[in-house]
Length: 317
Image (tube, rainbow, N blue to C red; front, side, top):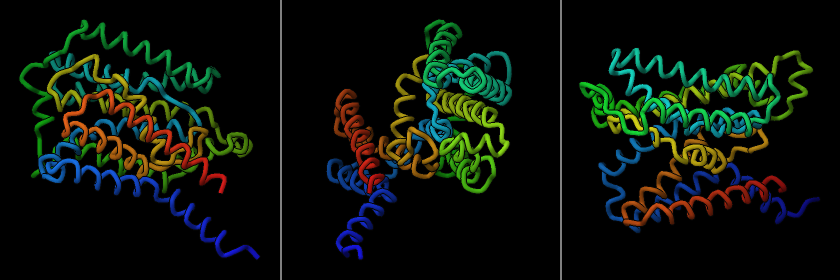
């Protein structure tokens, strides 16, 4: 018979691994409220939600790739392409056609990476690294290395559009979270993506074209990365080739903090959202305290290490 102490220890570890993001959020909110009396103001909360709209969308795209055991280093570069392209297209067409065409370009870039990684048998790390380099080049060529201010404040109109206190970009991010939560939990597509990350050979034996699904998740990542770039352009009213710097690392960090396994088959949209919020709270409270960005990077790294160690410990248990 197993000792009751062993059962209690295992139960505690199980609770810890199931709700680790919740624990981290509670701790971070508590620390933030203590360190800054401005944290719980409505203005600051809405500012956090606005700032996290683009990272949330991009992190969900990264999660879809991680679920199959892949990685997409091009998300920041595709976001930069999305930012400058939508701003440039606003000179030649309306805002909606510019957004749709930009999303199509992001989708095409993602599918190209997926084609190389799935059918081309190139490691996702290498394929996405190549697309990252291409994307950075495209962003700087389109923008000529300078920020682009679109005419008639078209992007600014989208960024300033509100439904009460809720901004349009927050609504877009919330819609992406809801859609992909549904896709992951209630559709055959979501179950197959999870299965590919868990055991791809079994998926092949079941007669499912795993390569097609693998290519599709990179397409989703490219699409959502371009959408993230559009959101940033709308919030700032400019298109910049520099907006995607470091976004791929933040997206990976958010997924890992949310409990996603880099070997695939484990992770949820809701927990990834929790990871995004954790990183956002760290940035916010440090900004409120006037701390430079470099210490913020150190804190992020420590939290990622802690999250990975927690996964290892609870996984063994």
